Amino acid sequence: MPVVVATDVDAEGITVVDSNSGVLAEMARATQQFWTATIPGSAITDGPLELSALVRMADGSEIRSSLIAVPILPSNGMQLELRQVQATTTVVYDRPWSNAPGELSWIAPANEGISTTPPAIAAVSDHEVAVLDPASSRLNCFDLSGASTCSVPLPLGASGDLVSLGDGTLLATDLRRTAGQQDFTVLRIDPRAVSASTIYHEFPMSVPGYPSIAQNLQFTWDAASRTVWVGLPEQGTPTRTLDPTLYPYADALHLDATVTRGPTIQRHALGPTIQPGAIGIIDGDVWIRLHQEAATNYSVAGLETTRSGVIWMVIDAGSANAGTSHELVRWRPGTTTADVFPFEFRPGELSTRLLTVLDDHSVAFLDTNIGGRIRVFTLP
Image (cartoon, one colour):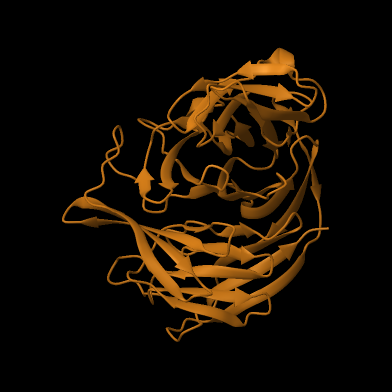
């Protein structure tokens, strides 16, 4: 099991230990900030694995991190039992397109082009969500009754991802082509202060090994290391196997006094893996299978993880005879059963983040209907 520790302490060495102070692995320094190690399979037993980092200083003193619990799967590649449940659906927002403050807008397609609709939703808190609206160059916030709680003007029509930093502020990304080159901008938005500022800009942006980076790339925030990770696309011809190297994360941005861009280190990402007639979840060398005999093809429209580790997914399952069906899936790692709720949705073009978790039981979902639409699904 791969382990990454981020610390600003000038450590002499770091050891990964269990709850009884037993040594699980010695870490190696990868960069000034990151240390890495791999815990061997022989050290992993049934039940949650509790571990912490024991930091050794040059003067002989030690600093120990708090314990974290890692769920252990009963077997690698196990197939989950899918249990269909009924969700309570709350319509938060479902109104015609409007460029008025506090409303969601769009840019209609021109000629044979595509429309521009809100691409991303993120939780501001467990009772408030924010939506990126590039058509009006605004961030719009709503409480769960649908009332507007913020309308923040943005310096550009950001059309990428929206990332919650957990302190009430958000990051919005924008990746576009300018004079034939990739132009990357990151905004930090404070809905309460009604402010947005550019914290990172790179032009032209070039990532070694990748001729271009997708506009609708999704990012993941890690508060402990103040790092925004990003799942880089596969190089060469995409394959659909259970190869864990297909889902590496790179540390894209470090949010310190000065924002810097990686990558300086990679780690495995939690992500979907697709095979004919089946879909799974892969995390490094560990994977589980979600399988439905009736479907012949699958795609993943969203994957989010709560603070306690509950995984939510939105899956499109299709077959030649039955068409396409959509499912909201909730699974807690370490258990053998996943909850499934069938529902219908209509995403806009170039959507980035349709799903945002509110807590272990509820998620907010962004799509289109008569205009923009936000729904909250609550599972038992």
